Amino acid sequence: MEAFIRGYMIQYTGRFISEDPVLSKRMSADVMEQIKRNETAVEMKDWRPRAEVTALWEAIVDASEPSNQEAAYQSLVRCGERMGSYATGTFLKLLLRVLTPKMFANKFPDFYKRDHRGGEGVVEEISPKRVVLCARGVKGYDHFGPITVGWCAVPLMAMGLKGIKMACTPWSLADPGPDEVRLIATWD
Image 1 (cartoon, rainbow, N blue to C red):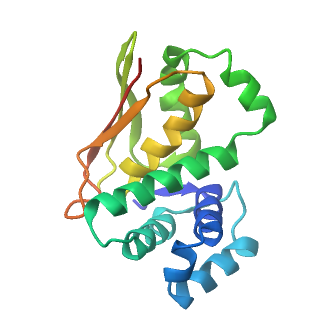
Image 2: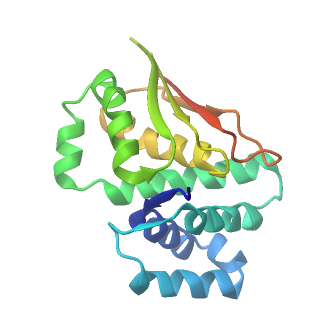
């Protein structure tokens, strides 16, 4: 069964690429044309094949400079942060000020279900200064880990947490889409 994501993920990834002065210049003409087509062909709430967004994330990896794993990871995290920022309207920003990390983490499975068909979001651990979330059954969802690291950092920062550190495991350029990805957040 093919996995699907919401169209906004494609739209926001394209917007990130287009607005980034370095990545946009390093993208192929084909990728930039696809982003332009997606602006009118993809609706935010549409269910789209997951491969459409992972192709854009792979283009980000290919355009990252220097051409190594750390640069690719940082570019993907920046994309996730921008996607989270684009999705956070005024009302949500106000709501995030009253949410706790525990409340946010407990909603992760719902967020995952709202935006993904295929796999599942699970809460593994909630501690006073640490949250571990897991996406299971996501084999082939290349670069989901670093993108979600960036996306999850946005609400945690909006909550006013200090010293936030985010990581995902496992993820590598050699295996960008493992079956299970853990997202680990810690803060002061």
